[in-house]
Image 1 (cartoon, rainbow, N blue to C red):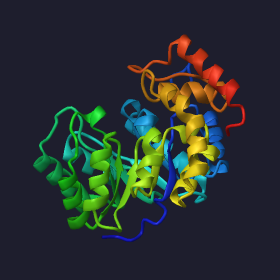
Image 2: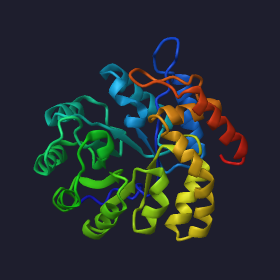
Image 3: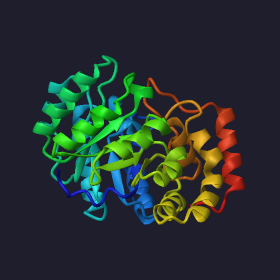
Image 4: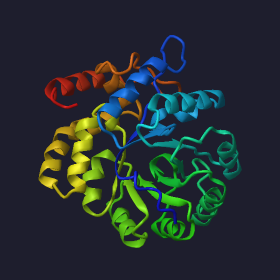
Length: 301
């Protein structure tokens, strides 16, 4: 197994993709501001073209433009992980061949969605991807979106047998599964939380960090929380976690990334609170709750 994954500790931010409401195109100015915001806030690495980035709505040309733009703006200041997922193994491999992945440190790839493969199908899917991936792979287990859980036994087999699979983003929300992941996977395999609200508890049982949504808007405070937890300073981490509890709920009250885009717009980090269909922005009553939260927790950065 590759050991070139030391950067996968702490906070990776699952970046949103800002869109211009009037044109429905990527808002490059807002994206640039967001990149500077999270880098200045101290995130450990960036994750682009994930679910939070509305990647299913982004076409091939835009993906190329987005990658080149982020590489140029980041300019090696932070490691970059790129999301590449699909429900046909061959189509994911084709994307590996055509996407500009030269400046990425790793690829995040979720379990195939909609067609709900068996555990054997998932094992063969990820094994095949590992053989063709030009960069190390981070598995992404998010059964609430994909309709299929990646079981501990399957993950452990992939972690042990596929040298190019170096980590997992675990977003099942299942603490029992999380504990067995730590027990069954090799020690040099990175286990990362995909649930901001569970990250502190998962770090307590052995996770090495989180790929976060909330870090888009509060990179400094959430990064501090996570690094306190990683250094066993749980009293300090808990205080920040309590402050963020209501925020976690507001982020996912309707869908992701509607919640985080509303937060970013209210904080004037992105220009438009706008999502591409079929996603829509939060109802006004929830945006009012976000404004109330931001007024109460003005100290959060």
